[in-house]
Image (cartoon, rainbow, N blue to C red):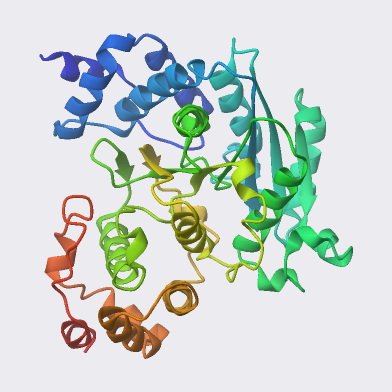
Length: 405
């Protein structure tokens, strides 16, 4: 048995986002890894057919602990996530099958990461995105019972809108926000506090991205002076546990986005909910943003690239799909999101023949044609590697129309 096979064998074999004990076992595996073996093990796992999510996560966690320990200046990390119909994820596993106890578990993961580092402090913001099920109130009750209650703050987007807060941008109603408005409000709120050496990291409400990996993003900003660090589920040494259908659909989205927004063609994963900003970079950066719904990530990436080229770090991570309880599952927002890509192209970039062609194609899309189309994605896109072939553009709009038919 090789060393990588032996490591995989000793990692937990089962996967379950509702099992906090599992995360503890993976963290224990990470603690036993030696710094001088991490890079080789990371590469070996990327090519081994036996690779598991748990094994890759353990390596990423070990690398993250080392990375954050190499930040020597006093640094404050603000963690941020939005809640909308997340009462189940906020609950315990014994209360509901989808219970992740996500707020308490995020706090525990953060504490695991920063343990023994007096120069790294943190706080956690939870933004209620106008939730009809009162996710924010449930989060507040959980926070009140936490030993870290002084480091947790629950924000309510509706209250900020009612108060005409400048931090909500142009929002007039929470109905105009689908995650994006809430995250943007949280980013503005955190940046407005003007903390020194502040990194603001936003994530999803679920536990798809273990916050113990945050050191990898923070180190890229603090030591490599990047403006934005993003978790990527498509880089060579990442591990993504999701269905083949979702993988193909994601490639299709990337393909169409790249036909329109050429400056960020090198970005392999625009919508992973695991991104960190240098708070200083956010000064005036969030003024006059167009998008407050699900495509807000893409606009932030494009604006970052246009403001400061090559200031985005892509960090390979381990990521597990939490699709069963997803609040976007029933919305199927892909056609509106693609139309927003067109809006970004028209607003930020000069005209380009290829983009004009795909712009017309996307404007003609309906939810019905999209639904039929995603089950007939061209094989060329299914087998395409967005990392190795950044300039791939071999599927025309005519071919795409034929597939839709």
